[in-house]
Image 1 (cartoon, rainbow, N blue to C red):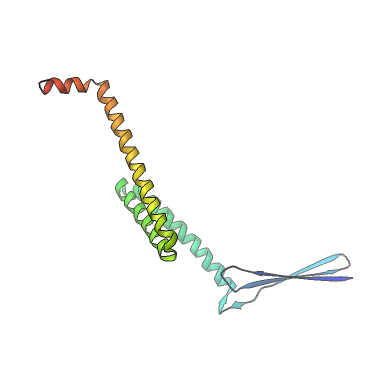
Image 2 (image 1 turned 180 degrees about the vertical axis):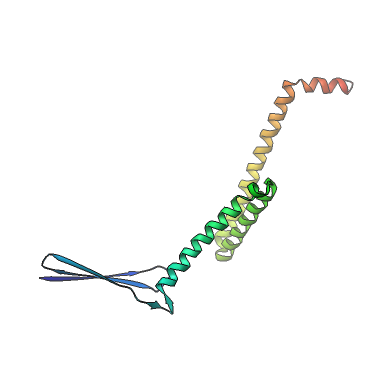
Amino acid sequence: MATEYLIKVVGEGSSATVETSTNQTSGLNENKQVVPNTQNGISVKNLKLAGGAMILGKGAVNFATSNVAEFTGSKRKQERVNSALKMMGHASHIAISPATGIPALALDIATTQISKNREIMWKEKELEEKRARLNYSSFNRSRNGG
């Protein structure tokens, strides 16, 4: 009694297919995988190499852009790089889908401003507490003739 199964796997975003067939004969399974050599003029091996190169490239770019402050010693340069990367992301999002990209940009601007305002508020509060510990307010009044 022989049973044969044919399974087709189609990669998303590509027209490359992998077919797997199983022949079952008297309890023994025999698997063979049929991979086409070329699909649309691009070999499967070249696709795998290109994918690996993209992963390596992305890792290198991420490492370089996330360590600008460490390499240069400038926190300001790191902030500029991060802002540029964020803006490029928003620009591509808007280019792909303005209906969702524009609200996402507005939300990012609003949350960033809220965070900065809270940071300023806490720094001012901390400064006031330090001044109070040093009794700066009474010292300052006495200098101004008060």
